Length: 435
Image (cartoon, rainbow, N blue to C red; front, side, top):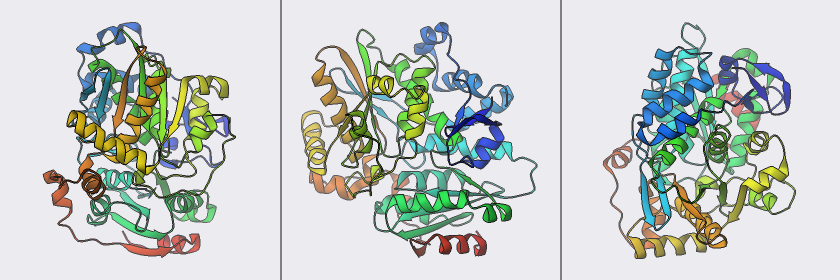
């Protein structure tokens, strides 16, 4: 399978080049040149298949030309080493819990796949790969733990100072070894801009091998489609249309769901649910796409003002904006909305939402109110509420007990470099740092 840039479909690269480059030289995102449609028999058998068996079929259809079956099984088994259960919250409304991995966030799936695949593709290479990551929270912790001590790979994580939760920060700043962390005076978009500048810096790329493990990298993005198939496999109620609501920031997760849809998964509607960083919902309601400075919210992992994966969303629908808008519905909510629904859901059901899952649930509920009795809905619960303990405790008036895995991270010693928002300083750091 070859991959093309969203900015230039005629230029194609191999899987290895797409994964190791991360971002195309023309700043486009890599896309598979063809999206395989899975057989009807696969969907008939889906409820009887394990998560891993689903993964073997889906990944073989995408990467079977480039990897052996043993490699695919190894890759899938490593990625899907934990569950993603579908939990009923209300009648016709289910939560897909994606927080049962090592760092208790959905990005564990993509990070584990990316690190394993990168290691396979670089086997035998003498050069080290330097992975650059901008994070608004969960990407940093998932990538750091996914790549921790992986031979031949160094990781540099940039994050906005004071704008990620303490637990998220401790998950990636306490590891050391091949993980370096930089807190930047600015917002997530500033971190992302510096990473992109490094990828496009010809001089720097001659000196070192740079790649990304953000969702811009196909190896981080594509495996996220697997849990959409698994969600459908677990859904016993198939007598209604299906809507899936995705709490969204950089929009890689929504793009992975649309990829699954294009491969044949019977999803009728996706809901793009955001906080007040509402660039995509505004676009879906008729405004031109326009990047804006991000605004801080209690759902901080979605505080993105220029979502990188927007071009992928369009590409998945053949750059047909009308089709895109017919298949995806956008909603946005402020912090008051988010806190209010966290309280009501706990009061009514006992279920504790994290702030991002709360936004996803709100989007789904609002959409389903517009279509009474037509849909069964799934929203993605993307992180354990303990990762946002201070917010959850404050909103719900509780002292949430943390899972042991999170408690362990809090015992580590933070090791971080501080930097103003200046690409020249970042470039100097990359040249001088010995990770």
